Length: 80
Image 1 (cartoon, rainbow, N blue to C red):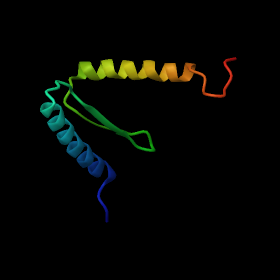
Image 2: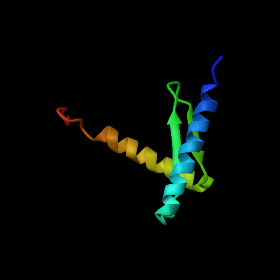
Image 3: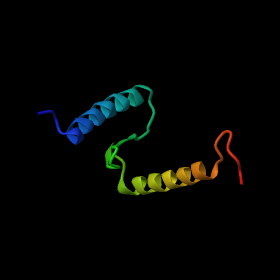
Image 4: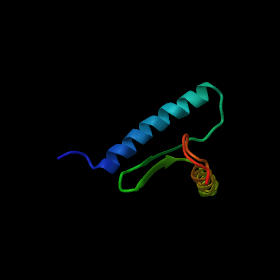
């Protein structure tokens, strides 16, 4: 039997985070990555070291981005 998908995804995110953090450090950039996967059944698998407060800000920004995407007409679409 294969690995649990959530376990495999978590492992992938951990590996990616280690690489990203190393590269950020090499570049002397003080940034905190937020890595996420969304499964087909809408489960979010998250890997980050940011605080819950930063996640709330990020969530609000994502909502705003989604609203702008909904409001922006698609190429070739109509505006009314």
